[in-house]
Length: 339
Image (cartoon, rainbow, N blue to C red; front, side, top):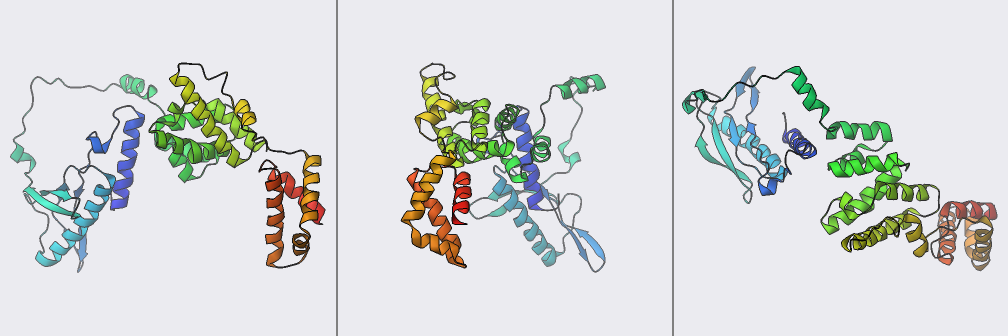
């Protein structure tokens, strides 16, 4: 690794892999995982290469501490080299601790070389022979690793690398998303519902997305309704939250939520189905235009007023329909009328 940022990226990916494989929860605050970077510099001076003594920073319990301790050590070692000229030699390795409050490393002890530990073979430990068939069997039972899943979400579903990273941070979230897409929903719509509403709700409740009571098919159906213009994206978030709330209550009461809590039922009960009837919307647009003649005049004029006035008229239509009008249909009618 050549920087603290690279080291942090590796550490984050290792944690993600460990969690995906079910090896550990890898909670650094609980001591499930620690990092101990070995740091030294290679300095080129006057055509000669110098290596500073290796320092091992012990028992780091956060990615922030990992990154900052490396940055601190790099600067400390450079300053020490410029002052003393000390370079790597047999027996001058050391271990240091990280003081989180002072944001500095502190010397713990000089580190022994391998021969100082006086290692000797343990006669009761038998050799482990790794056959290709054994390794193949292990490999066949492994899940798709997070970095491969993240790349697939970008190439196969057209997601941004950032969104794919958010979705693959936890295995259960990634598998939930995958299942929702396979249930027939648009990947980007499903991604938005999960990242902007589902994960926020799960975080507030202190649980995973899959523990909210929602099913991948619920989210797929809701994504299709948004894509078809039956509900707005804003309404979609409201519906998702209400469904999670109702299903959570029914699960707590040990009642099946599958029949009573559906996307269609919740949408109708909340009265969030968008109005897309062109005839009805045209009548409302006519009312708005008659009531706002100055705005109509501003739209037909050039300059900044035109766009602002058009936005005002669109907002008036949405207000009259209590936000239920399909904005796309309203825009088309407005454009036709104003022309």
